Image (tube, rainbow, N blue to C red; front, side):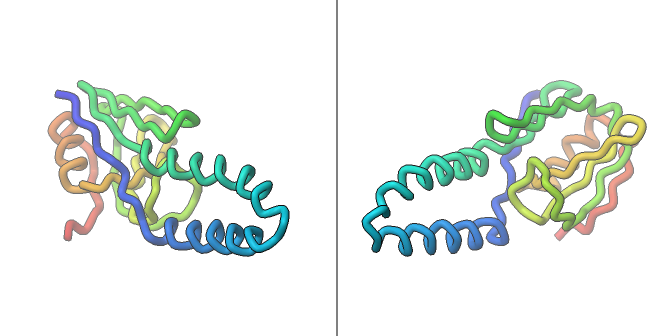
Length: 139
């Protein structure tokens, strides 16, 4: 069974981005060079929106496919997953929220993700690999 889980979008990322892009836009629109700044700013905004809307986690058979825009694609054998734990680690990751899961797999590898439906995602992983150690507080 193939199932795609979208990434949770956290206000902790959205609000600062809106403030920065909004402030820059308003500040430069009042100048004669305002349209030139918008030509530069618009592709940046579109790229960020694209990353937010295309970050997802697909379970296809025994494989977890992590995708974020056109820049990041990672596949993980679900049977190699050792542990899933809750974290608020702000490191760069294919996650659009600070409400994250750290997946430990392979020998020493780990990745941070932020599925919107955490419990459903974890249950799906456990249905494929019941040996995964889970350390989360389900709300």
